[in-house]
Image (tube, rainbow, N blue to C red; front, side, top):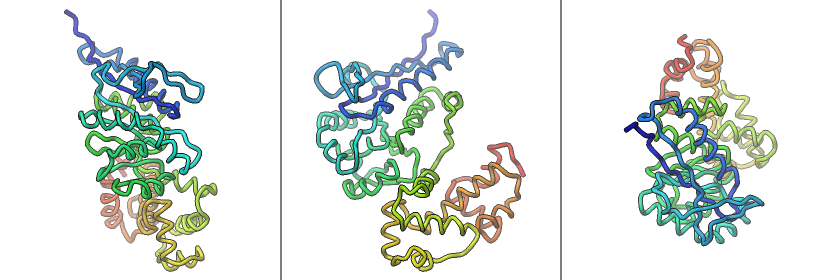
Amino acid sequence: MPSKPRIVHIGVLVFPGCIRSGAVVPHDVLALANRLMASRPAAQRVEFKAHWVGARRGARVDTSGVGFSTVAADAHPLSALIVPGVEHADTADLSQVLDALAPEQALLRTLAGQGLPLLFGCSATCLVARAGLLDGRRATTSWWLAAYCRTHFKAMQLQPEAILLEDGDLISAAGVTSYFDLALWLVGRHAGDDMRQMAARMLLHDSRRESQAPYVAQAIAEGQGPVVIERARNWLGRRFDQPWTVQALAQHCRTSERTLLRRFKEVMGVGPVQYAQKMRVDRAKTLLESTLLSLEDIATRCGYTDASTLHKVFKQWAHVTPSDYRARFGLRR
C-alpha cells in the first residue's frame, strides 16, 4: 500500500470577541505549509488539519461580524491549541472582557492538564494567565501590555522583550502579527526547520526577529509612550558610543532617578542600563548584517572599548559570537 502523509490536527480556539486574524492566520499558514510539502514523498509529508474549536454550546461562534463553525476540543486528536488575542478598547475594558470568558478559561485548564501544548500571544497571554496557567511560568506579550500583566498577574515570569518564548508546553508570542511566528513554530516542530524557513520566505516573514525592542522604540518615537520615556530613549539613542550615567539621564528627563527607573521598567520591561545594552547589541547586529566593517570598527561605533569586549557582550546577549552571526549572512570578514 502507498504511504500516506502524517496527519497533524491543530485546534484554534474561537470565542466571542477574539481577534479575527489570530483565528484565521494559523489556518492560512498551515495551508501554505501543506502546499509546500506536496512535492515531498508521501512518507515524508505532514498534512496539517486546522479546526476552529469552541468552548461553548453550539457549533457556531460569531465575532465582529464573522462567523466560525466550531467543533468540540475532543472532536479530533489535537497536537496543539492556538489561542487568539482578545479584542478590547483599553486595559480597563480588557479586565471586563476576561471576566466574560470563563468557559474558555475552564477549557484551557482542562487541556493544559492533559499536557496539550498551548500557543498564544498578544492579549491572549492575559487570557491564559487569568486561567491560572502562567503562575511561575515564563511568557511574553505585546510590549504595551507589560504593565497590565505585572499588575494583574504578579506570579507570571514576564519577559516582554521576547518575540516568541517557550516554557514547556506553553508557547507565547508578542503582538497580533506574531501569530505568524506561532503557526511557523508548529510547522518547524512537526515538519522540520527547513519547511518552517521555506514557509517564512513565501510569507515574506522575518523569522529571525528575536526582540520587541526595535518596535517599542519606534512606537515611543511616534509619541505612543510616556513623555519621560520618549526623552530617555532619544537621549540614549544619541549615545551609542559615549559613557553615561542614570543621574545624567534623569536630569535630562527632568525627573528623579527613582521615578525614571520605575517608569522605564513599567513601559520597557527593563531598566535604562539593560535597555541601552540591548540597543547597542541591536546596533551591532545591524552593522554585522549590512556592512563589511571590521569587528574593531563596529565595537567602537557601539561604544565598546575593543572587539574583545564586543565579543563577550554579544555572546551574552545574542548567545552567539559576532563572527558566527555574520557568517549567517555569508559575510566572513
